[in-house]
Length: 245
Image 1 (tube, rainbow, N blue to C red):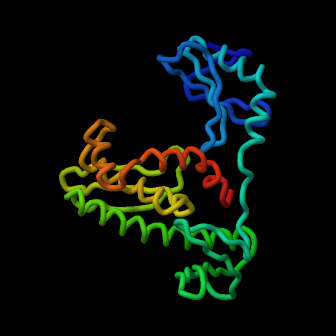
Image 2: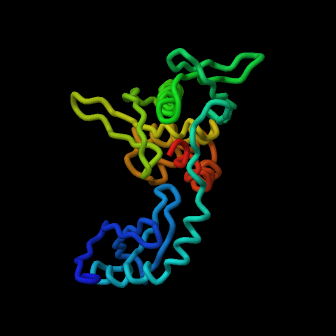
């Protein structure tokens, strides 16, 4: 299981055409294949067994042109600067420069929401992101309480994270340790209904630690048909992850 003298293993990462290629073993795969993980901005080279990982790596190198084309299709990183307007839970939010510490200004009848912060470059961007995270936590905490009440579930602890692998995660409660739900703060950049679907999804896991029929019945009872929201995340997830990178 080696390529050019190097032993390869499931999860190894290579660089091809300036892209990260992650090797993956999938026992149900029938052949070696490549796909683009838009959220993680990397190529996944899948092999049916560990023995065929060198073949998957070689296939990725042979398809360097295809890989470069797929990377070119990804959204470019979006820098954060005063004067731009972002969407916050589907509503416009203007970014402004200020001589004072960062602050979130809710929308009024006359003006959209605003985030004001001081500094330049990374200092300004980090301050804006802190405000987005704070607003995200407020909304996610409120919606978690709302959905838990409808499910009859005990309210878990709620935190925000910055993960590329998932939009949310649920840890069930244990004796002496309450349940905990974490959400990606980048969901604040999505439509409200999409972010709320993720909240409902994780709250449903408080009752069903699986994706079986009863789990999806809970989700549908909370937000209706979840398929448009899942499709939105597949289509727009890479753009959310490009923000501020």
